Image (cartoon, rainbow, N blue to C red; front, side, top):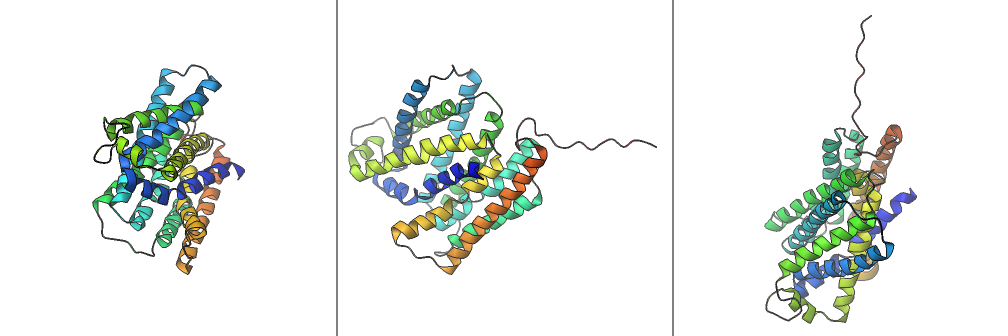
Length: 319
């Protein structure tokens, strides 16, 4: 299971970003934060790409990177705006639905679904998330909930497309990730407003640059290098070597790490309900991994790949 550790590391990094992102959003606005996050990410990836000097990417490779960049940018936009307009409880439950949406979408595209046991395990993990965030209680549905639900659906599409379009093809992971960061940087910088580095009224990029102090810049850099560059690279690298369903299940442990980090650094307290939630998330994740691994071992091919086709029943022969 060592190959799962990078994805768990991504889940830990993402779980550590909740409070940081919330504080930065208040200070400079959603679009400004996303623009700065992507600009720093692209600035970090472009030199790496230049130093590595991979072969010249094909038009199809650039197109795949652009498409994945668009879907990833949409996930972050809907998720960040949604969190600003709903409770963390509602957001945590809704975004965890990706655990169920991804294998469903992957089954539709690959024309073969994982066994029911996987979906049961995924549902148990989602139930664990409900317990993890059940302290404040669920609030009445709001517009923010709709945004989070859209983010969950787009994330499922993004993870599934990452495997379906990139797995088994001669694409460079660093090139694809660089294209994703550049696409996001262009989109969010344009959306943040024409005033780039001059203070202005409203949540523009210029206002954020002027408002951020040393700690805020360190936090933005962490989000860019840890939650974007590292996470995007590892996520794409791992999905190309396993299934989108397995990756989504592992990334779905994010709320567990968020809670544990809150306990370790934020002085929060564990309750029996929280411990039960952690147990269900980890137990459901482990069980789902076993089911998915058994299927891949049987098929000897990555789930969702172009070679992974549904079984065709043998023709009945007459006696």
